[in-house]
Length: 253
Image 1: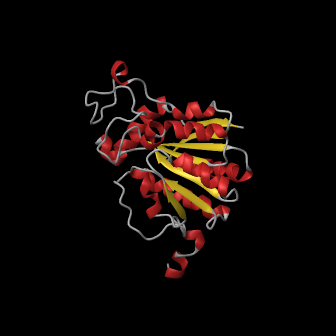
Image 2: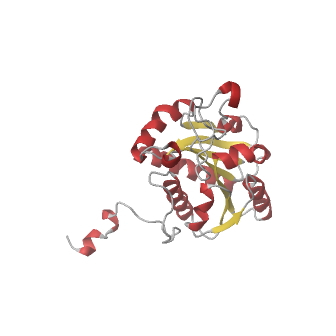
Image 3: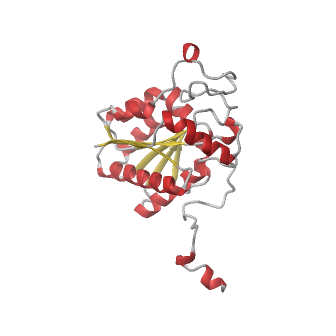
C-alpha cells in the first residue's frame, strides 16, 4: 500500500480536529479529559463555529482545555464559570458559549453559580466532568464521591453520618425550569463516545437556537486519584459509578 492510499479519507481511522493544536497532552494515562476535548473540537468544527465559540475555563484539571483547543477562552475564578458564561452570552448572543468544569469546581464551590445560571435559562451549555474526586489537588473527597469510596481526605471511605450524601447535580438541573437539555454520558468505549458527541452537539444546537440552558455531564475516570490502571478505572466506573450516576438523557424539553 502506497502512502497516498494510506492517507485517503476513507482510510483514516483517527482524524485530528483542526481546532486541536500540537501541544503535548499533560493528562494522566487513562484520563477522560482528552477524549472529551476532541469531541468538543469536532462538534464546534462540524457546526462551523470555529470563529464564534467562546469557552469558559475554570480551576482544576479541566482548566487546561484552553491549552489544546484554539478558540476564544475566558478564565473564570473558581466555580464562577457559569456566571461568566451568562455575561458573555448576553453581551454576544450570536456566540456559542459553553463552560468546561470538573465536579469540584461545578458542584462544590460553584454550586450556586451552576444552579442559578441553569435556572435563568440563559442559552449556554455547561459541560460537567464528573470523576467523583479532586484530581489536580491530591485526590480529596468531592461532592460527587460515592458512599464508601476512599479518597485522601476520607481514607476509610465516605461516611454518610460524617460527610453526607453524594450530590446528584444533574438530577437537580433536570428539575429547573430554565434547562432545555440535561443529559449524563461517558466516554469509556466507542459507543459511549458516539453518544457523548451527539449529546454535546444537541446541547450546542439548543444554545444557538435559544431554547435555554443545557447541562452535559460526562461520568469520567481519574486513574491517578483512584490509584488504578486506566483499564481498571474504566471497569470500576462501569461497576460502581454508573449505578449511582446512570447514563442517559434526564430532560429534553
